[in-house]
Length: 312
Image (tube, rainbow, N blue to C red):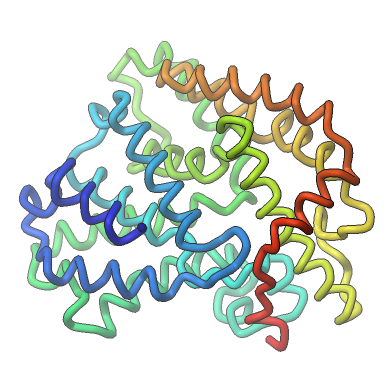
């Protein structure tokens, strides 16, 4: 799904390859390798990447494409497709606590996100048949690389509050983006916001999908918590299956993370008001659920247990 969707968007919808001179054969080879490098975790897998990519495309089509040039759109789609490549189902805190190779390489800073960006470019660099930017002008490749890295690093939840605060400040100063004399906080800032919000949009989906992705996310968290207990490490927040209340965790996620972000996003993109409305609906539905029945659903889902990094 990830290969086909990305290929369709870049060659048929946005026509990025034609406009930018990107080698389609090499892009296809890169996409296949990227999909192969996604791990079969309960949540951070290639299906999640496809879902985030689709939402990113929707936000663009609903009007945000007018605020980006061809390089930004291309870079954003590539970043969305590869934003979790190689994710092992364990969060940054786990890697830092265990002092894994990944944590050591990136000095405990956006460990997973740096790893994803590295892998996306390493696939290009290590396989000539995948290097779809080889031979293109240096100015383009330099900007493309900078944007992809920025977009992927922007998915680290550690930077969420700062990002949304900067976004709100910009909206206040620019009359909700209508005053184009007011500059964005940084180059590529909007594309970074778009990918980040697409990445946390699960809670704003129709109920069946919102519940489906919540179960998968919590299953992955609980797998990590089980490993942390076994290794006698502090159990990360929301990762202890015996103490985490699933409905309450989702209500908190909506109230303190997703809702404030999408309220601001809707000021720039009116379409996003649908997300705000659905967040309110889903919050009320979570209030009617109890933790026991939700955990039963999670257990009944037969979600894959991923322990790739268990001995890291």
